[in-house]
Image 1 (spheres, helix red, strand yellow):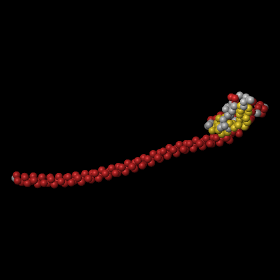
Image 2 (cartoon, rainbow, N blue to C red):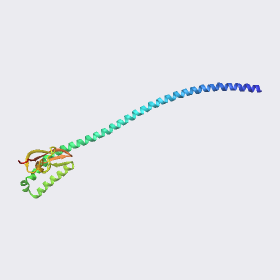
Image 3 (tube, rainbow, N blue to C red):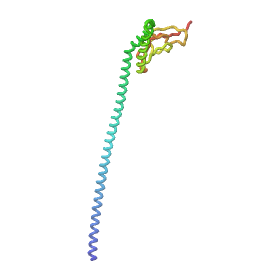
Image 4 (cartoon, rainbow, N blue to C red):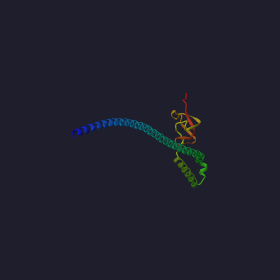
Length: 197
């Protein structure tokens, strides 16, 4: 029996060696397959990461384009509103000039009944207030320093004081601005100092 056991042990150990060789071969094959799979997965991960970056960059560009388009639309809308406001005010300037002429012509308004003069003055005030809410400002006051952007010189006047040089001495027609933009310069007489010899 001991011979039989020895024989079985011998057969068993030969089978173990063969199995160990198969396992080693199988492990080597598995390791190679695993390395191939890892390489493939790394390659796929790299491709997916690249694709993700492309999508992210595209999305960011799209978002930036949207923000820029929104700003451009707002700028255009604001510009259009300013243009419409300026156009409306320009159309109403002759009406304001007519009111100014009527107030300067005291003879004409003094003969009118007091109620009519108050109504006339009230209409002018309301109209001017409404236009000022849209950014209208009068320019061209006596004593202002002459500014070529705001004043149109129609006459020059000699002045005796050096401090009055290049100042507005008379306003022939009021000028107007809408939101920092001159829509009509004031027509003025400008003082010019000359040293007497």
